[in-house]
Image 1: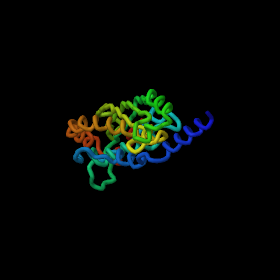
Image 2 (image 1 turned 45 degrees about the horizontal axis):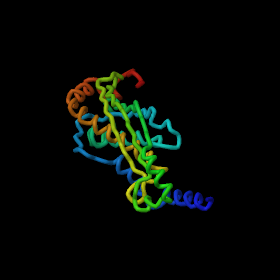
Image 3 (image 1 turned 45 degrees about the vertical axis):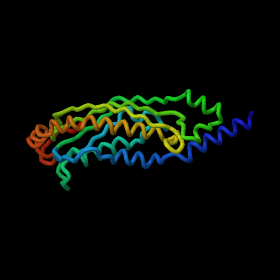
Image 4 (image 1 turned 135 degrees about the vertical axis):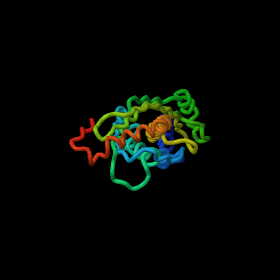
Length: 218
């Protein structure tokens, strides 16, 4: 019996370390993903990120800087004008307001254990990580006034498996990052629809450097 458990532990460690897709590459691709044309219809904005409950699970899920990386990439490609310009006309504040992460597939795990993890060697998943994220973007002018609020949600599903999945120790992070990207994908067309109005309002309040005694961003 002890030999059986020792074998299972060793095989489980092997599954966690070998044969899975690179999570780091997948996270990088997700952060850099670019599913629409860079419109550049808003002026340059200072990014402010509040990850909220995203990093509440210590040791699992998104890294502390993942939300900032995803949002700054979004600004660089989709929202702010692409030219090199140090002048900022306000703030784009990204807030993660709700995060729910689940692990599903416990029945599959039981089957795997009964069969000495043999299905895993054939590519059958061990489990899935699912993340639901709700997020908001606020556009704030140089006076500290909120001139637009936009919300979106994202639902991701990442499989833990050999060959065609990710390691058990890293899938939680990828699930969170994918959900963030999907939430931003929902917000983007809302911002695009209001871009002309927002641009006019931001220009009217002027750049941050020229607003004397401007309110500090809360």
